[in-house]
Amino acid sequence: MKRSDDEQLTDEIIGEAALSLLNSNSAINTRALVARLEAMFISEQEVRRRNVLQKIIAEIEGNISQSLTGKTEKKAPSGAVKTQRLNEKNVH
Image (cartoon, rainbow, N blue to C red; front, side):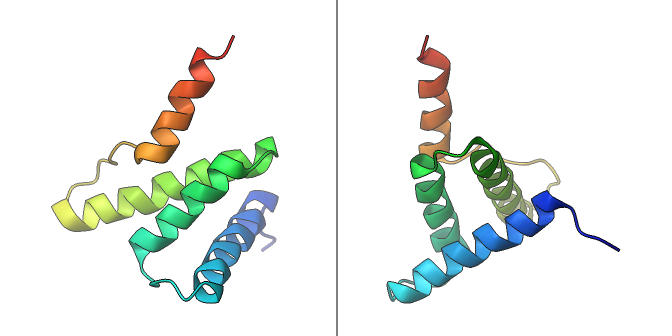
C-alpha cells in the first residue's frame, strides 16, 4: 500500500522535530516534542507544511488529553498555535 504525501511529510516533520530535540540535548518526551513542533509551526512559511504541523500537534495533544482523561474528545490547541491562529484571523 502506498502512503500518501501527507503521511510521508508527517513522518519527516516528526523526525525533524525529534532530531532537533536530540541535537539540542533537550528532554525527549511528548510535551517537548509538541513544543518543538509548535516552534516549527510558528516559523514555517510553506502553507502545506504549516497545515500538516497543525494536524500533527492537534493529534498529539488529543492523544495526551485522551490518555490523561480517558475521554475521546480532543483538547484545544496549545497556546502558541492558538495565538498564531487568532493573529492570522485578525490580519486583513
